[in-house]
Image (cartoon, rainbow, N blue to C red):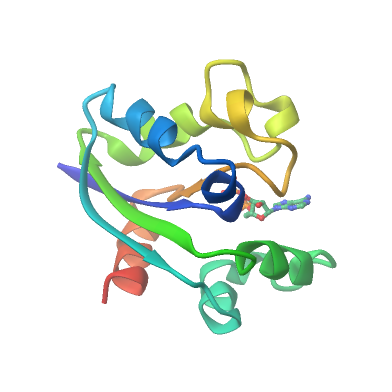
Length: 132
Ligand code: ADP
């Protein structure tokens, strides 16, 4: 069984979409095995989004991601990492196909509802980071 780390972002929390996003993952047989609500901070985001630190809009990402508490979850299932990325859709919600979480609920590139690990390696690192 593979595991993936999911973060339900502030837009998901504020717009009361938590239940719907979890249902989409449960409906395809994926199982939540860990869950907590936390307030992200600068240090954790610099680790989690290390690949984005040098981008000009990184401070805006930090501002957005720290604007409310987020729900951090582990979902488990066969081929979970790839399947969840497919269900989530691409980063830019405007380009995400209908039927994907970002396509149906996301607003733009920043407010795109959820994070999901993008490969098995990062899933392991992210799970260790958020569930020490
Ligand atoms: P993903 O979340 O699809 O794995 P990235 O790792 O590239 O995408 O980016 C992390 C997060 O940073 C995105 O989910 C989004 O919230 C934000 N982001 C990425 N690119 C942009 C952008 N061009 N403008 C605004 N926010 C962005």
